[in-house]
Length: 389
Image (cartoon, rainbow, N blue to C red; front, side):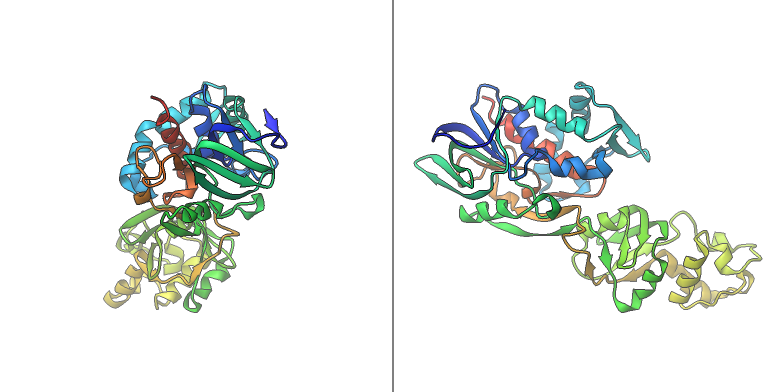
């Protein structure tokens, strides 16, 4: 049921702030005997979910563990065990959603993400949803929460904050969840863009000349090694592997292995071709990379020890990105309410009884590949299950 306005003050059991992936999944699993209200600033539910993955939503991944996330390991592992990727897939498949595997790793809706939204809508039909309702403030008085909105004031015994992050401004994303947390005295990490392309320093401006070219690489950031396709763009670097690398990059250098499936020695051994023709890369990339590591495009037979040393840099091309493409291009927001402020097994505030934070508003961020939707859904279930006595 969708309600357009608030008629009278009423004490609800729960108010869920946000009708995105985490809020809807939480609502679906909350006990049905509770009186629940959901407040959403958009005119429709799950707008980010609707447009993600080209409209087919990358739900989760074949391999899901805490190693695919930046965040509190205890909370992540608990959530992934309570509502695993197997349980997530089963939940939607039981409702008739066809899910397909792409590239042997990524689970997508076969037809449309609208199927998932329809399931979540059905599973939360008992919840009163107030759409186009902007949240102004949340306060607690005498054990009750009061939520001031553009549609009036709402009251409840408990509040679940599922307001997401700042990425996808096109669907009205904001940092209202962090503002709520800070107003209650909770510590937060301000949102920054994540799963986003990286810009380059002038020394790597030659990357821009390769705009549109894609190549499989390994990227090392600190102790993480990411393996996927990299895309050269007019702004710098993008593609799946770069987006995941951006999650872990803060400052300093990253390293790219342009030949992860080969060794230089094997490639040039007995070759009678020029180096640029021997390297298993697009020729214009080979030529640019040879120049970048200070090697002339000579015949393989003429490669000496010094040249070989320089060629090894193709396995470890290190440089410091200048920055990233910003929130307008970011898939998700990194940061959020610090997990040390929450009970990792319920996601309830340790200091403010009855106040919960789930999904992207929490300081847990996953790599590219369905990990953030998995966290959104799993964290929603963690919160909901804590209501069951």
